[in-house]
Image 1 (cartoon, rainbow, N blue to C red):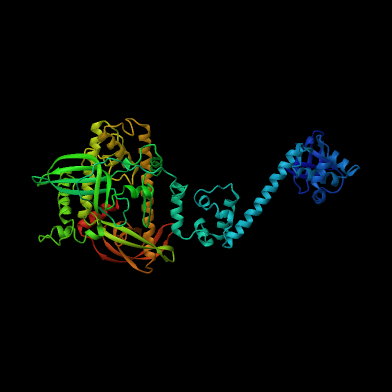
Image 2 (spheres, rainbow, N blue to C red):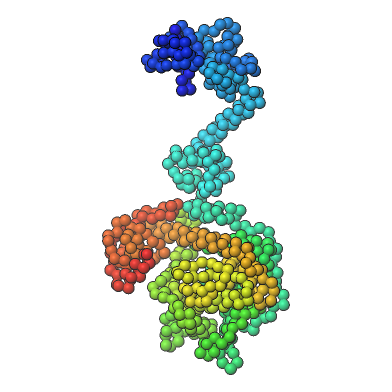
Length: 637
């Protein structure tokens, strides 16, 4: 006698060795002996042999129509052998019964198990839902395979093209598009961005980095929503000055300008004039909502995303040939450049010139200023020289003379009309010594304005947003506190309201003090605290993105000149800072050298997607002097 039984979810057949009523000793067709409870036996039979039964039953089950079985069975719970007898119209043999059992067991959507060998047909509505789900999965599997095949062949399926940012930067692995895309990446051995480059969905590696930033911080795009036209502030007195700005060639958001007016009886009246968009729209307006959401202009080589719409910037920027609304800080200084008094007013300021660094610095630099002959004459020389002298006095008064020895600033210019093998954009990187007379002149006057207006708010009991530094750590605060690094009692960013929301807030607060009006943000304002926290996080993220894109364009600059050697300075271990561009490179082949050692490298490989570079040591150019070694070691730490 043989038995059919179920063990670990599988059907097995064997020969009875001993039958003890409640239990049996059985030897399976594979020679394994097991002990079974009699209740676990599904069927007893005499023929065929156990191994043959299962083979013939599986073949018979394949010939049975599951849907037909579901149609003809009763709605009540039933045993498989009873149903087999009903289905065949006679007492079924072992193979016929086992075939029915295997088919019922293999179709759980049609037949719900109710015990060993017992089933109940699934209700029609539940069955239809299950079949619809199964069909949906089949269609999804076909779609995944179709999209995967297209991607492997280098073609972009429209479904995937419609959701590229999500696939690249925040993939939802429950979507069929993501499954197809990731399967194609596995099959091609390519990372996600490399596969998209192959398929032409990304024009260049630049798009990958730029679009990732937009996806995280500008998910709705960089287009501005509709906004109310800013107010042209009426009845502002016209300042009796001739103001001029000093900026880089690419600056369009001109926030600050200066004026120098002789005073009767000697000395000068120095004006620091800051653009006043806060006079054009109020807190809670549509433009405030835009600025609050963006918090700052985003800078990067070859591009920028402004905090305010272009039309608003053009209205309030301190452009030459216009009388511009401004918040002005006036300093009455003696002939010896001692500041006797200061005054802050809201007014219109005539802007007569927008000076640019590249035009002025050839005639106004440290070499010229130390030339006893006075150097060449040019327009604005008298005013700039006076402001330079005043800046030195102010710097000495802070007791924080900045040491910019040998420090270099780099400027990036991208020609988007020129294409290279890496896509649109040909980058030029120029150097400019940090701490030039023009830099110091502007910096010192901005420090003075920001600290003076910070005190103005503090003394009036009006909250503002301050930069506070103590113990070497810089943080933002709504209460005035000293900035040790600058050597001032307080420092409230107020000089760039076209570019930073913090400055806009402080300008609203300053204007409220000057006009004796209720401030836009009251003391202990929760909105002010929230704006401060959001700005701090977002401004740091924007700065990090700018640094990342500068590194990216440094690699593009190197790739524009394949095979060149580059010189640099060892900072520590195998870390080298290049001379020509602001790029630090780890060089595994670099021998042990002192910090400050000048070396020559060759670039072997660069990756614009990973923003990574591989360089090889060529030769040592020069050993460092003691000061270079100390400076390099400090920078390397």
